[in-house]
Image 1 (cartoon, rainbow, N blue to C red):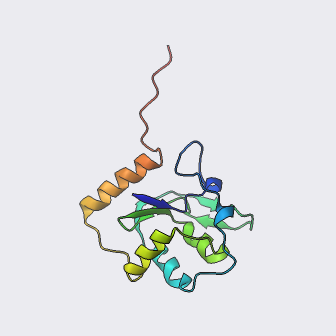
Image 2 (image 1 turned 60 degrees about the horizontal axis):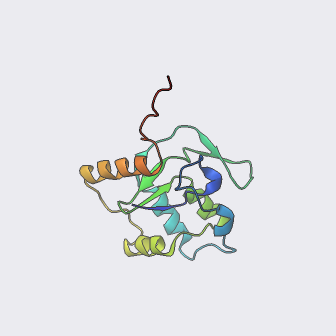
Image 3 (image 1 turned 30 degrees about the horizontal axis):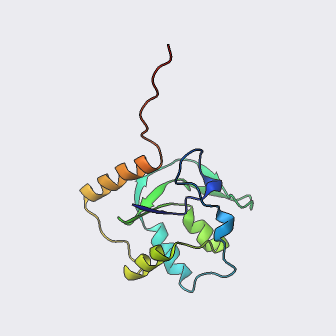
Length: 138
């Protein structure tokens, strides 16, 4: 699966998916279709629900409830707070992700339960939630 919006400022170390800085992805103006893109991001299939509120990494003092939760459209994974950064700060999305959103006519595709399970397992793997246990020290 492809990932978007897992910015370094949001993630734990040392998960490799959190490598890109949000500061490098801020645009001066919103996308012309930002409202539809934000709705798409909001409507993704939930894979990992994270309770709590994430602080705005760019310092507004705002908190995003469930921001670390992970969503999908079957091809892409993103954090729930990505829509906040797109809407508030005009964070850029990868061009191929934008192309997929637009090709889907801004509607999240229906997915079979098996596909959602597989996507959930892949998300857990990518985000390091299922790492093998460390050998016990003796």
